Length: 376
Image (cartoon, helix red, strand yellow):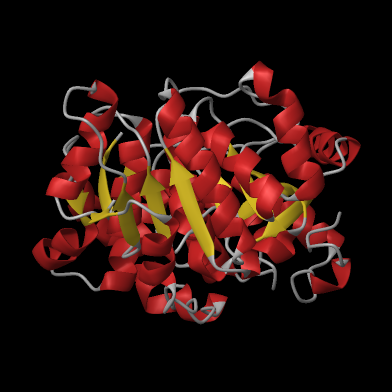
């Protein structure tokens, strides 16, 4: 079960096959998202111990619990191998540092291709699926030129601007495609050949297990990965409330550069870009504008997993059982910041995080963007 780039020697340090299997099983288990997954690893030290503890944690929230069946995970791993894909874990040296700094970064990705491309300066190019011919050409030309000067271009393999960006980048150098489906599913179908080229000549990434068809709820998480991988995101054409604007918003929330190509106010496909510029995005009209904006960017230092994990201790475990009742009373279906819960409850942060973890595993809690939570 490889999880490095072209050389499996770059795999996560000392990760056994048994622990790798347990990590995949943990992440595929009910009510376990990226934040919960990392908190469980922090609390129990490894995925095997976390799996053993899940029924007891859910029991405190009054729910029975069964982790993902081992046979299902065995099938997933076999399907991953069959496609020639491998796993990339959050603590692998090849895991992209910028993505690791984004909220809710996926702890496990499947990939085909060269993860070394993630170590280069990276820029995202996104835009409308029904883009104009002029915008498609501009996206292709931008991507080609940026790849030629050393950037890795990342996009989502959608119709229109995404496809043009990948085509231009492949001709000029390097590209990364992030898909909302499993690694073995091509979407849209007409991009099957392009997706295969990206995997063969660049890098293809998927968060969903093999065989997963792209559902509407998968695209925002796909957009989160695109924004997280890149130092900056360029929006070429986008209608208001489009997925491209979600990617741009996420990039801005992560502290990355947001760039937009202006367009005619008479074309609805330009309204999103023009709105971005009005709201503070950088107006770009040439590749030189992008290079100048991102030229000083040299990446972020890779955070250690230990530093990013919350600390757990026996006092927090003991306090959590009493705290859970108070937290449940403070929660409603309206999302609230965890910091606000800590402030209103008067309990310590470790006890609050523990109580929330138990509620989530019991299926009673939903996590939202921006560190907010609500009752399920």
